[in-house]
Every structure is written in C-alpha cells, then in structure tokens.
Image (cartoon, rainbow, N blue to C red; front, side, top):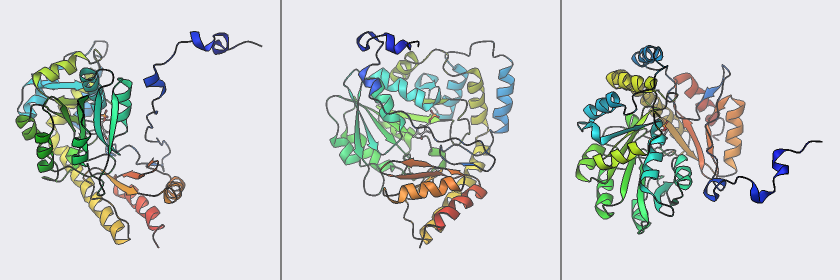
Length: 365
Ligand SMILES: *Cc1c(COP(=O)(O)O)cnc(C)c1O
C-alpha cells in the first residue's frame, strides 16, 4: 500500500493556506448547462451572441495571439476615456470588473482594513476583501431590498478604506438614486474610496440610478466600475474597467496582473463601444421582457422589487426556496439560489422567459 503525499507529511510541516484563505467561502458559480433544452439563467449573461463587430475584432486579433497584448491597454483606455470625457490616465482596465475590483482592494487595503458593502449583494465582494486580508463589513439591505445608506455610513470606522455601492444591486435589482448617493458622499470621509459598481447600468431606466460621472466629477473619492460582461455580451473574454482619479487609476494599474487583459478582449471591447447602439437595441428587448414578466408575476400575487438589471429577484423562505429550485431543475432551467434569501433569475429570450413564468405560475394558488 502506498502512502499519499499528505499522509507522509505531518500537518505542521505541510504547506498551509493563510487563515484568510482557508476560511473563505468558495465562490459559487452560476450553474452551467450544455443540453439543448437547458435555459441558462443563473449568471446574468447576455443570451445574445457577441455583437458582430466584436466577433470580427476577435477573429482579427486572434491571428496575432503569439504576441503579448499591449500591457497598458492604451487603445482601450483611450476609447473608454473618450466615452466618458475623461483622460486615459483616469481609466484602469482589468480581467473583468472583478479583476479591477481585486486591484482596487489590494491597492487600498492593508491587513485589517475594512471594506463596507451591502448584503446581500455581489458574492465576489466578501471573497475579494477577505483574500486581501481586509475585513468585510456587511450591512443588511433595507426592507425594500435596496442599500441602507444610513446604516452603511454608520458602519464606517477609522479602518474603513473602501465602500462598495452596487447599483442596480445584484441580486435584488434595486438601484440607488443619484440624490441618495450624493447625500451619502457628503456624509462620508473623503479619504474613503467609494466604488460605484455599475455592472448592470445599461439595463437601468434613465434616471433610476446615479449620474456616476457627475458624482465622480464632484467627489474625487468616487470610483466608477463597469464591465463588458453583461449588456455587451463579452462575459467569456474577461474585461472590465474603472474610472478614478489619475492617482488611484495609476495605483490600480500597478497592482494588475501583467498582460491580464488579452489582446482579443481589448479589441472586442473597443469594437463593442463603437457598436453601442446595437447593444442598446438588444437591451431594450430585455427590458421589455423584464417588464412583461414582472407584470405577469405581480398579477399572480408574487411581490418582487422593481428590478433595473437583466434579472428578477424573488425573496423566499427556506421552505419555499427548495421547492421552487426543484421545479426549476425539473423544467431544465438553471437559476441562482441564495441560501436564506431568495432566487435570482436572469431575463433572457422570450421562450426561456415563458418557461420561467410557467414554473412560477404553477406555484400560485
Ligand atoms: C457580473 C458582475 C460584475 C462583473 O463581473 P466581470 O468580472 O466583469 O465579469 C461586477 N459586479 C457585479 C455586481 C456583477 O454582478
């Protein structure tokens, strides 16, 4: 009988993960489906194929993938800067906005520093914070499933370095109004970086959320975080960005993994921004579907927050949630369950959405 390597080494001399890492929850990815009849509605991806211009840019860039990408991503940063009317010095890119957020947290937090965010919100937040050795401070959502900004301001201590605001909030879909964020920014110390994570901003109705660029101009401690993964349909390529002061943006670029954004992703992101009107036409259809589903569900007695993202949120107790999840499983529909809180369902093509409605209608008396 042979011994495995772990049996040969006494615990004390085995390589050990840092406590912050071994204590981490695992990131629970949206479940994936490959079957033809599976509706993949667990990850808020776009159900559309990539925009034609993005696909063409990738094909072209692929011919040169023996070369490293432009490490400074100058072309993409300039294109983003032009979009916002800022300088390329104020833009940092990363492998997805999760990658940029990791750069933010490692760039600003020492061990024991605190990052305040709402909960429930994006699941990557506590993981990124804790792996950096910082402390995650979760502030419960208010009764309307939105950020409780007063409680978040009250949770700030002298160790707070970063506050994360997710609008519209994943998974509840509730946005934070411009006025509320503005008042919040007046009340928090200006040495705390306030990150406005707008992963779903393209799906939000005009005026429902903040004018984040206006807030950034008025409050230099604001950092805008955006992604190409959702409305632009580039989730598989990994590219996102931050707009922040040149000092912060430079710091984020320093903490980045070298060459972390591939040439394919850079090219596709530029082409996508150039084709924003095509993206917007697709988004308009998703928003119509979101409204259609919400109206039908409300009519059937479900109460849901008015989502401004490409997803719907159903708060459930621990008795209903497993039964709903079984019903979705049996119908070949992948959705995301949140222990203790609820279920998030991505809004996609009308046929998939009808399948979701059929499952939920079977639960209404
Ligand atoms: C999906 C999502 C992101 C984007 O992740 P990428 O790394 O850019 O794919 C960021 N924030 C929130 C809240 C999200 O839901």
